Image 1 (cartoon, rainbow, N blue to C red):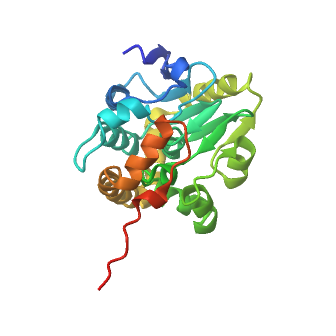
Image 2: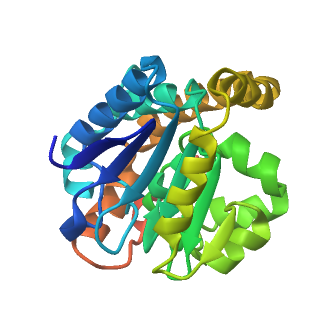
Image 3: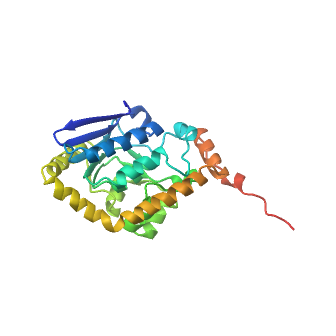
Length: 261
């Protein structure tokens, strides 16, 4: 599909989000297409490494809200869940160049990547709480495990934005580079990985993931169930309406009056 562009350069599969005018926000169709890309790459012996980046001045601004509201995920298999499964089971290295916005899923997807090079202009955020929903992609488990509960609470329970420097301090990215150098560095690393022995490379990644993979899968399942319930709540309705109307949400509207005897 045109919204995601792929190209093979030797044994490197380059994957590019291609909705620059929408800051590469994800539609349901894009989730399915990206899941298919990773599932095919997992089986393709000619693909040793995935190099992932966005067109324009952003990596990914999360969900396309208008598309999302037309197709909210249910408790079962959803486009988002298909991509989550593809990423958590992917045992080849993923190298990412992040520039500009990496919001919502644009941040949580990165928790399944191995090398994350952030441009100085990169802006991260997990604003799920602000939309009255919960984290995704297993991030309710992986982020506290990586940076500790207290630091994770700031990012998840407050939903605060953070820059590339802060992401590096927290250990959420590999390195911060100038905007003009970030893709070149990611490409260089992908080339180094592609020259390594493929079977040992994949086995090493599987071994690194093995102690945590069952926990991540369980977290994803729980998140998906909670997300599908919360997204249909009155709080979420107010949050998304306010987002589209470009105003601050008023969650006091959704508080029920106390029951009197």
